[in-house]
Structure formats: structure tokens, C-alpha cells
Amino acid sequence: SAKHMIAGNLPGGLESARQNLIKGVARAASAEGEMLLEAFRQREQQEEVIKRARGVGVGPDVERVLRTVESALMTAFRDDLVEGEAVIRIIEDVAELERLCRRAAPGADGPVGFGRGMTQLVSREFIVDSIGHARKSYRISDDDRSWSIPFDACSVVRSADWS
Image 1 (cartoon, rainbow, N blue to C red):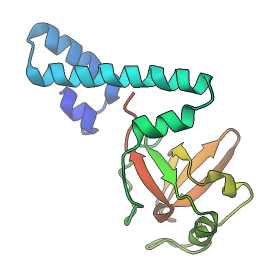
Image 2: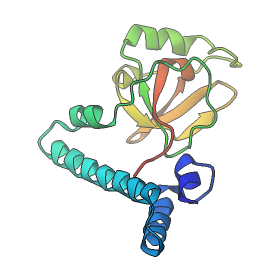
Image 3: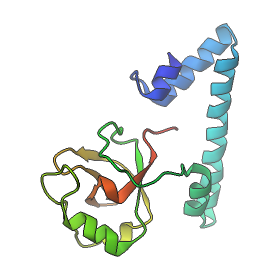
Image 4: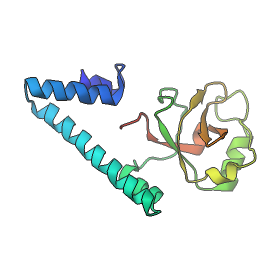
């Protein structure tokens, strides 16, 4: 069902869920289906606003306003994040990021390390490229560079892609 796809319990992702909802509502309208389709329409409108905001140089600010899910730093490693879809936000303090990267995260077999260019990561959001189970970390990238971030140096913005 579309609800299970949205929750990530069935394969197919959000686009498949949206298509299933469109077909289902066409056959038999339901308040539940209509509300979920309205949420998809709202999401499309948000994406359009973000595109326009990027064009005038305020994309990150508008994204923060529209997409931010208020969340605290992770207190436990989450291996349920969807690689290539989940979005994490890196902490705001460079010194704290360095400290967390240089020590092993709780339950990890070692530190991820703190490398060149990591100071630019603070306060930014990234898609999780892969999950590092041994180091309890998330691999992120920007252009041609990539880094591992310990779970407790970030918060989850989205656990899956909602587009």
C-alpha cells in the first residue's frame, strides 16, 4: 500500500506511493488518499519555492525554513537511515566536530578521524551516501570529496527522500 511505501516498509519509494495513491483515488476516493495526495502537492510547491530561492541566493535559508525537522543530536546510532535518501545536519561547532571525529563514537571500533576540509561541513545538510556500521558513522560527500561523520555529530533531517 502507499502508506507502507511512504513509511519505508515496502519497496518502491515515494514516487511509487504517489502513483499508487493517484490510481487508488481515481478508483475510489478516500479521505486518507486525498490527504496524502495533498501532502505530495504541497511538497511539489515547496520544491518549486526552493528552486526559485536558489536562483536569488537564499536557497539554504529557505530550505531550512521549509524542511527543518526540529531534532536533537542523535543519541544512538541509526542503521535504518536510507542510503542515498536520508538527510543529516552536521553540528554547528567546528571544535566539537573535530573532538567527536577524533574519538571513537559510542559502540564504534575506532574514530572516523578529522581531515582536511571538514571545517566546511558545520551546520550543513547532506544526503547519507552510506552507513559505516563499524565506526557508527555516516558517509557524506560534496562534489568530489567525501567524509565520515560519527552519529553523535549530527541530527536526522529526513530518514528518507520525500520527493
